[in-house]
Image (cartoon, rainbow, N blue to C red):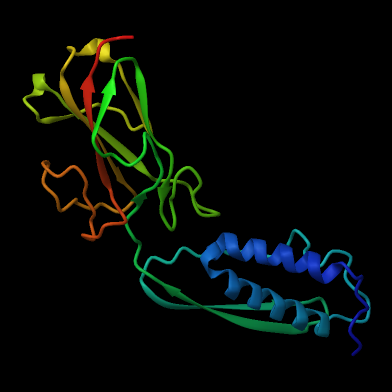
Length: 231
């Protein structure tokens, strides 16, 4: 059997399409495996087709399967395709599924808390990004939706220094100094979560907290604020 003569751009186009599909299913961090699987599938396909190239090798009726591994460990995905001539081709893709890691606070505005911030007019405090292998914010992994939760609380003189939830799950809050007295010292706190229920190991007195006890991936940060005179 003679392999069909392919247009110059065909292999590059179809390879890009297959890699895009596989990376959406299995994650961009497995890009190298996706590229290898796509190249192997295309080479085997061209060898099994008759001398004429199909009108649309990526026809809509091609089956797709969304794999959602829910158990850690090694998975093997086996794909077998059969063409109209009864010819078949198979390929295996080995995946190592790691435990879901906790989300990490990324960029914030104002930046990483430190020192005292004077608030003399309404000011927005915002989490700009959350780093997570699946449900990051604002852009989750391809094929996923973000499950990032934002939990804001405020400690004021009126609360006796205890943190009181602000009742919002938005990625930002606005602190209006008109609600407080000039000179008030207040603490604004944000904590993040994802689809996995986890308990922070730090008590409320800790301004920052990391589930893994490290110094790079935090799930809690706190801004210390002082209410100033309006300009």
